Amino acid sequence: MSGPKPAGRVEKLVYSIRELAPLARELEKKGEKVLYFNIGDPVRWGFQPPVHVRRALCEAVEEGYSWYSSSQGDEELREAIAEKEWAWNRVKISPDDVFLAFGVTEAILLVFASLLDRGDEVLLPNPTYPLYTTYAHFLEAKPMYYKCAEDNEWQPSLEDIESKITGRTKAIVVINPNNPTGATYSVETLKRIAELAAEHNIALISDEIYDGLVLEGEHVSAARVAPEDATIIGLNGFSKNFLMTGWRLGYMYVKGDEKVKEAICKTARSRLGVCTPIQRAAIAALGGPLTHLEKFKRELVKRRDLMSKLLAESGFFSLVKPKAAFYVFPRLNFRGPWRSEKEMVKELLVEEKVYVVHGSGFGPGGEWHVRLVFLPPPDVIEEGVGRIVRFLERHVSR
Image (cartoon, rainbow, N blue to C red; front, side, top):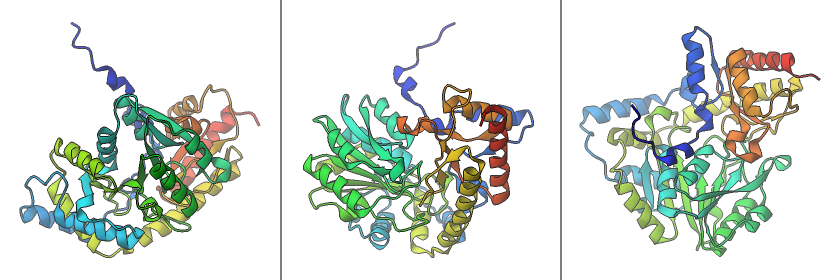
């Protein structure tokens, strides 16, 4: 018997980072040891939220913080976020500018749903985090990619951004620090992008979830350097800086156009609110010491340097060394027997049980690249890269 036909929009939902997860699970059921280099989850590799944050969550539950949260979020937490944005990024916002979300993932959807009508365009970095593309398609809007130059440390091309702004453009997205490339953007670049957004009366959406994980240089927030008349929507959260990945708590803030803020507030009300006790724990996270963050970054530097060295020495890859986050995005120095790097990645998982992400899953600018996390401990990094090299030596003529 045939059932109801699923909605056509479901076909537009693609998330390349987890695309091969069912295959990986099948291999594990057969007793294989799969090495996961696909998901940016520090907790899976032994890192944990600070002790005082975990305790605060338990205390919040015991003290009865289990009612529905307001749609915008806990007022005390929003005050703490406003203070954090000033202390970390020199961005001046009020608690009323802040909205809580189920991670940055939901924040992206809420913002896009509040801004984009069918046929509207949104400018995305190329390569980009795949959910920006997916949610634009889901809402029947049109993702337009602007170039980020690999030979210029993956910096955005200002000329390309300006050339692609049309009468249908509603927003420019900036991911800084960047996923998947690990790039950080200069003051001059961010300032000019913000100026373009203001000149064309469109929003600048600035994804800064890795703002505390800059390994070289410093993080500059777009809102810090934007002109006063720009509409800036900042996206951030607790998954990365505070190692609260499975807790699913993110936030956004809106500086500028009040109509945009009201639209996001209305959209947020339609999904009630986010988890109350986790919001109470997030207050403790922002109010507590950051010793865990410095320790985490020291480990990331060691693991980044090791993975970068091993990949470069193999001769199969060329890469721009990432300055932030915990990903490498090397270019393949070969084509081999595969029609695409996506085919290669699947075969690698089947043969060597190493799960990496195909670069084209991050947009056309990622073709013949792969993304790997460098979160695992050194012995796992060495084993994983060793398996990859062994696989390539079998299939690629040099």
